[in-house]
Length: 225
Image (cartoon, rainbow, N blue to C red; front, side, top):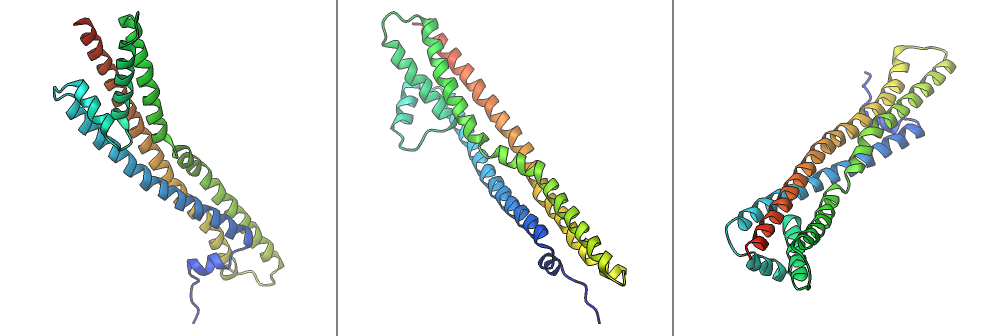
């Protein structure tokens, strides 16, 4: 009674180059999923913090009180909190400088906020190039393993006296596992990269709108003095 070889037996019986390819793809897949879970948690928390901050900011309270509360907080500032803090700190500093016009004051505040904004976005973008690389390269790595495995199978077939489907199928099957593994590593990485890139762009737009709205608020405050 013959038994069909399992996937594990096919992998263990594969040639060394194919096994190396499968190991590389396994490591890439594990790294990809680790990044996927990390980015999902990071971006979800960033959206929640943005919503919470916007509700507090537009509640009508004093900007000085909000700045003092954020400055006293021992937690690291993130998102709009960090952008607001850097902008309002620069605003308070420049107001104490003699001879500063309102235009120079607003420009200085905007520069400080833009620097912090881009730093926040850079933090969200960390790891996305890795997902893009895994998504684009993994299928080709898997294809290399498949080509190598099929080539080895046909070379062994040429040395065999009796060539039957039973002797050809297992080596080709183990070679095709490399293609399947390449797709298994690539597809989640591509989907996650596209999804998280869109979410980072949405956060950038949200932070950018807040920066413009805050600058407009400061301009009206300066004009009313």
